[in-house]
Image 1 (cartoon, rainbow, N blue to C red):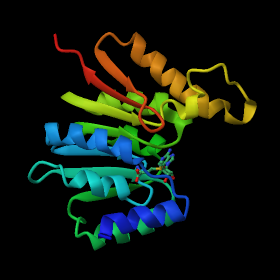
Image 2 (cartoon, helix red, strand yellow):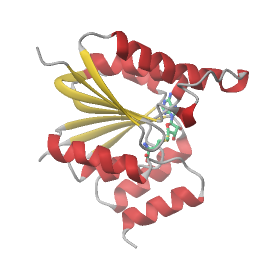
Image 3 (cartoon, rainbow, N blue to C red):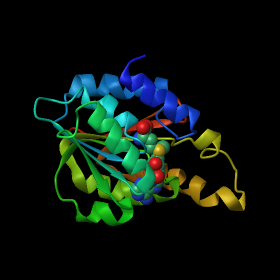
Length: 195
Ligand SMILES: C[S@@+](CC[C@H](N)C(=O)[O-])C[C@H]1O[C@@H](n2cnc3c(N)ncnc32)[C@H](O)[C@@H]1O
């Protein structure tokens, strides 16, 4: 088993949520085509997806990835070090709700994979930070099928409302075009429309 597979195994064993294999395959196809220089990830966990994405960066490319859980940050740092990617993957420690408004670079790929209730906010900030020909990818958008159903249980309401509002916002946005794929837990791929 190589080091990346070991990180994945450990995450699965410890029930740390990481990108699913079929979803990763789609994202990697996009990265292979785009050769991004800058990727922004919202939701690092223990660094698995960022480490996978790093292989597809353009020369001198960089990944900024945001995480608020101290324990996961510590583990992500160790994993990133193990793969000698410290100069390429930069973990931004904090809540993305506070971190995103402080960023002002443009990113070629933005991968949203954090608290579902905050997806509408993440989308607003991602549009602001997106390079002209950039792509916003959001995972878990179908949330086990709840997003497009009538499901309305109190406990899950915010987590369901977030992806719903995210999709509504995209539908109403005339400048963006979005594909929704039923891969993993639902994935959207959003680009600016070509004029
Ligand atoms: C699904 S996991 C990320 C998995 C990772 N992208 C991967 O595939 O390897 C989501 C992570 O986002 C973090 N998170 C959730 N909401 C956040 C927020 N508002 N700001 C920063 N991190 C957040 C959680 O602590 C969790 O580790």
